[in-house]
Length: 320
Image 1 (cartoon, rainbow, N blue to C red):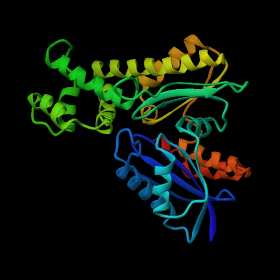
Image 2 (image 1 turned 30 degrees about the horizontal axis):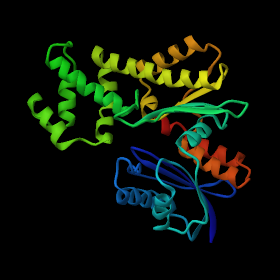
Image 3 (image 1 turned 90 degrees about the horizontal axis):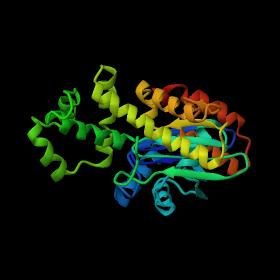
């Protein structure tokens, strides 16, 4: 049997899983759907975990999982059930989305990470060991600057544009097309009767990005506001950690879309408040990389070869 470790990043849009042997060689990688049980059923979460792990392990003969390190809001027992539908696992730890994202982005547990995917949050640790986090309240309470928030803002902008409260915008035609609607009159019953999922709303975010790049002022303003909200998460964390010289990185699909309207606004707002901050973007590795590095650290294994192999494995593909 081959002893391996797993790193798992499981969130509101998808799960990512990676396997390595104890020498740091990458053995497999797999993805599947969302696993956050606030927004998907337990059965679906288990299925998506199982599928991702199965894809990761499919080319490994007789794997023995000695440790799986996760960063996910999903309860540990559900993660375990999903993994063990594929293979027994000796130990599972869940260090949280923020920790694996920070470790992946900066290769350190010291610093600050801002995450903007389907949802949004920020947090970090200062050199004295103090920790702080903010955001992560979900779509109806918070998640400002997230993919969901951008999608919801776009739908709201459509209503204002149709009402002549805002100028014309490309978002009307494009969002109606995304929902496969024939005209604007179908939007209200579609939203309130069908109730699109959080993930479906978040998938409007790339439409907003594309429209902004093509000169749509309404889309540009939405993205700039997202940048401001995400900067507020960052500056609040810097302030509460009393860490004005922090290294700050960002992860999640909203940032890796590379929208200049988000990134430039974010960087400008953070630097105005804290000019000595170092912004590291793109992150060195994605959160799933941080998860498997954390697994090696938990086992007191040398991580240097693993990190080199992770850099080669992901290259720039994660940021595309």
